[in-house]
Image (tube, rainbow, N blue to C red):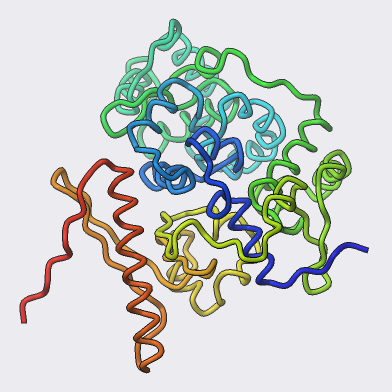
Length: 380
């Protein structure tokens, strides 16, 4: 019978699986390999999600990994931009793109993006980018317009997304603060090729490697694969996974994580973590109650509108949000903790959390290679 775990065990093991506790991951590439996919529609937030899990990494080092094609940013699942290990993108899209195209069919039809128009866009992209060329998003839009393809009314964005989903484009080298568009076949010349069942097994295994313990329902939400495909993947991956029981429900984690996180005293890398918005620690699960209450979830996702604010995490629990301001002269950041310091004990916890948050902000500034600036004191 599978071992039974408490919710505290789940939190401890997830911190380890996500590279937030235990042996630090050495680089952003190692983080991408561990997590498989890190949400990155907010480009700076996605970069910090990789950086916070590889202590000591700087943004410039991470951008080098992106600009050399070790990590690629594209649409591997859910119609959302993610960072993924470059060689893994192809087989992921092979599993997820057919369902996504069914979902985009209606909006594409409304925008007048029929098959003929999308194929003209593909031909124009290949002609413009072949030979390791790249274009900024603005220049790519200009190129489409010059090819007789209107980009008005979100047509340009949806053409880019379609070409990326179907394996023609991805984001490539850094251009200023953004990335340029490149041809995927040139950018990732040696993708990993897997048969369908093998790919399903790899998808399931890699999710639990970077997110376990979690449930199959968590994976189905995260990947948007069907339950039937998920069960096939589980059967293929089963010998590399450990099954545990949490409140009577089956959870899975990789054997590697189960072994690495054995010490009960394992704690997160720093007493307080300042995680970015849209971070996998919260977003990567359908059921988020192990790390945050339902009441406080609405403070992280105001109006449950799909916008995930940056997270303050202590002892594996999300205890607040934070805001930052970045300029050429430095970083300022403020935490908004959920608990009101209305008692002596609460004030002590708040002061301890603030000290830990200050250290976390220092780590974030070091990642950006900028100094920390004091938060201005309001005039009284």
